[in-house]
Length: 207
Image 1 (cartoon, one colour):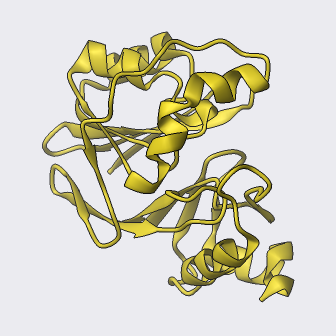
Image 2: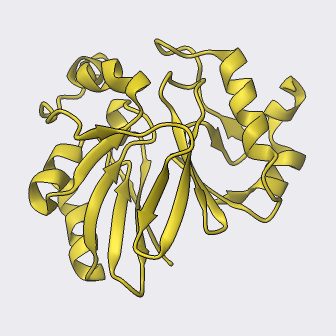
């Protein structure tokens, strides 16, 4: 498995290229900004990107999705419960003082239990609301890509529209119930593991 991370945009969002070395198939997760850098990464990898997966639809995670789609033909996928956020992305960005291009409509929706096949790799969709109504994680191959549900030592904010501490608590429980060695690739900040977060994440006290 090939995992490439780029830190992009004004909020230092982690964009990921996840690929299968054998088949050269890949997905891009959370292309928040700087499409030129993401496209250069794709080109240098020699991968064929067939999907753009949004862990949630806040502007700093989807701002470059249209550019990546236009350049690669990849489908934009997200959870249906974040469609309203997706459609209001320009308004979101404006609140933070940023201007982004209007995005094309999503090409499809993913939901709890769906499998995302990337060549020979397989990832299960986990619906993990709390930070946003349609937040999702991708779990498989020894990793979990969590968007803004959980970070090293922290969790996502719940004071945005559609946020919920109660729902985040349930989502957090699901993640830390995974095997301790599972690598957590979050939407911001460094990589961690489930075992580390069980021991050190402040949110454990909320449980």
